[in-house]
Amino acid sequence: MLLVLCVDLDDDLGRKTGMETPVVGREAVRKAAVALAIADPEDSDVNVLFEGLHQVDSFDDEAVEVAAVTGVDGRDVEANRKVGEEVDRVLAELDTGEDVRAVVVTDGAQDESVLPVIRSRVTIDSVRRVVVRQAQDLESMYYTIKQVLDDPETRGTLLVPLGILLLIYPLTILANLLGLPGTVFGLVSGLLGLYLLARGFGVMEWVDWGVERVRTGLFTGRVTLITSVVALALLVIGGVSGMQTLEAMREGASARLGVVEIIAALTFGSVQWFAAAGVMSSLGRVTDEYLDGSFHWRYLNAPFYIVAIAAVLAGVSGFFLDEASLEFLAFMLTGGTLLGVASTLSFAVAESWRQRQQKMS
Image (cartoon, rainbow, N blue to C red):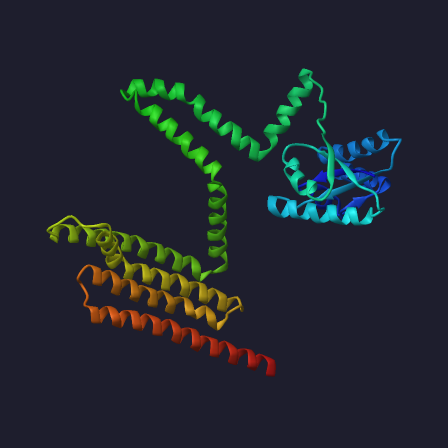
């Protein structure tokens, strides 16, 4: 038996039409293709479904069935897993006792990445990639370019680098007039490099997310916003303090400091400030959780854990720098451990007591 398998890895069919997948049978696939074409006529998966129907009609001399399987949008591993599960369901429905061979229909190389998953379940006779023929006249090219440039993501990706490159010539003229002929190339290449890195690593998405968080915090009265600013300032102070401690150790040392001494100096000078930043940030988070009504006693472990870790790091780094005795190190290690254990047990008991009170009420 031959199975024509239409693959939609990013689940356009399910997301845009609300249909459950897999879709099995010629009439069911035809209805799915029509529904997707109505929902989004420009979706290339429409052509995949119709090509699957065309393939079924081209095999007149043997038993042929057609099915459409989908994955998950934006997550390759989960998408491949879901396609595999749907192929298993299709094969279970086609359990006729005959050997099943498959003709896989896709719309590009991305969907073909799932072929090993399908091949592990059924023998693949061939792969059919659907490429839509487009008119090559000037009008069609004009509207295609116009549609691409209307897309905000594509517009930002293409036009911003081109704009920066086109600025090289006028900036060069301006730099020559000002007597700075070499500056413009470094400036332009730096801007272009920063932009490409930002696009490549998705920094702009993080910036947008951060701006949205700040805006939400300002208008909803989030304490985390204030404590985060204070924590950031404390981190900067801690970094400066660590560098000052390192410089002081270098000036007072008779020999060159090793890697262990450098790390210990940086830690010893900054750990108290970093700990204060961590405590400040965690207290802000705990306060917001309490105001939102989602507070749990175990959240209070965070500041105590931070203090305990800071105590251990201070003792160890001070010992390596000969700023603390062995007895002080033992005290800090023991105190940090006991503080962490005590806070864990205390808040666990408080959480358990709170749950019992809620059940009784």
